Image (cartoon, rainbow, N blue to C red):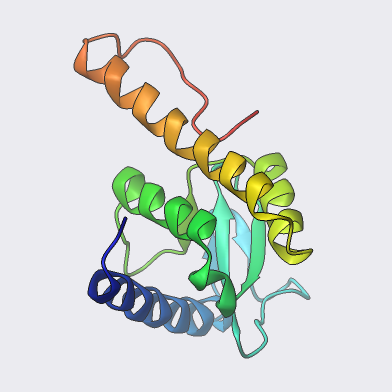
Length: 147
């Protein structure tokens, strides 16, 4: 379990990144082949932040999801996988299908058992991939966030 102080520190860091991301996405430039200026979804409402999935799908997420264990675990995985870039949006190491499912569960406030199962699938995928890397079997592609 994560300590209260670490959770507060991570939430503050993510809020800062979300604020930077919100400012950055409204600026006119191209992000990975996506022209932010020509899109009608380039702005983000107050109280939300933007994340991208591994397949470059854009999701606008409410800030209160930062209090959810499932979303915290996804952000930790993103930090481990891609780092925290200061000049690029946050990219989560999962595909759009998984992200849509996770957001729908979090949005409708699914029961804790279902949320724990989703969290378990996320963490088991990460531990499985790290065990393959430790064994030197890096030539296998492992789905990190899929069902």
